[in-house]
Length: 366
Image (cartoon, rainbow, N blue to C red; front, side):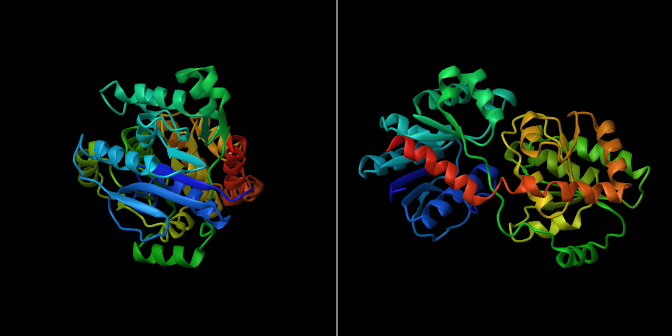
């Protein structure tokens, strides 16, 4: 397609903030730049300066109720004083400056946490999600499950203007047995390993994973559970309690993107067990790419993304989760077969596929 002048807006950008939404929009930025588009990305500065041409990190005071108005005001000035062929926001809060300045824009909606998981006691977030969906001219979504969510929560009209772009796996996610062995020696691990990595949030089912771990240890005493990720603000007290209450669980904190493939490769099984608010599920795809079989909850997004290449357990049932872990850890041939069978599936989640789909949306509008 022809070279476009594109504006991306997002509250955060990977790796300044390491979550799925930030990763997705950073991948879109990189892919569009590689295809020759003129891309400007307005985002907040939270933890580290990126020094990447085209990414403009806006200074923000990290205080509740202050950072959002600062972000909105700064981005609004930028979009009003520049002309773009395409403006693409990453989520409802990133769309606020576009709504307030009456811009024509595309938005990405990743999940329906404000509706499903009650992230806030204030009703403003569900209202903002609906407003964003109504005002956007196209909605980029990461799975068909999201289309059904948009229909249910915001209406049929918005579902019809939604387009699936998927998520992609970075090129460094592949089996790394030598690095995994070094980790095994570093942590003095003797037996099998189950691993979770992701946001430490209440809806992620992490406490159920811990409960299941202790059930499994009755059958596999040398089992190790490793948990990676940063606790959200609301979970920090709980996280500190866990670290004291469960001393034999290895709480790893934030794992860098460079280190993560080695941890996936170390694990005998990857477990992710959310009970709400998953629009895609990138970590199980990364785990499979690194040669590690997956056990996850029965959320619709996991079933769509993983198809039949995981073991699915109903959420919030740690005893059933424990049984699934025991069965998988005791069957090496099954673990190997699951990884082998998943290889065609992983070909769907490449950066090229995502950027092809994003450009197709843009072509509809220029």
